[in-house]
Length: 88
Image 1 (cartoon, rainbow, N blue to C red):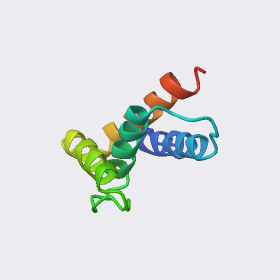
Image 2 (image 1 turned 60 degrees about the horizontal axis):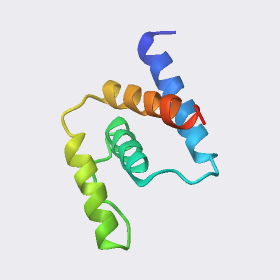
Image 3 (image 1 turned 60 degrees about the vertical axis):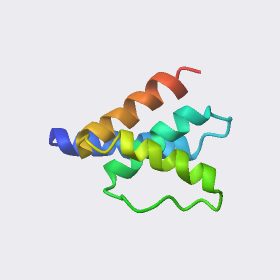
């Protein structure tokens, strides 16, 4: 398995972990995860919330993450999950 394939597998596992996580998470962490996820999936469309303020926060998170590569976004997502969510 290539390094890229390993990274992609770890990313998918981290996403599945977050999707199955039931405890509340801090908003700043969710925004970072959102931005990394969107970059990793090359999804640069507008945020889809019905709440303008949430869209603004999501758009800001995307702007902050716009200059990172797909691989950096995947690794950032994995690192956040391991450091901030799985530790608890």
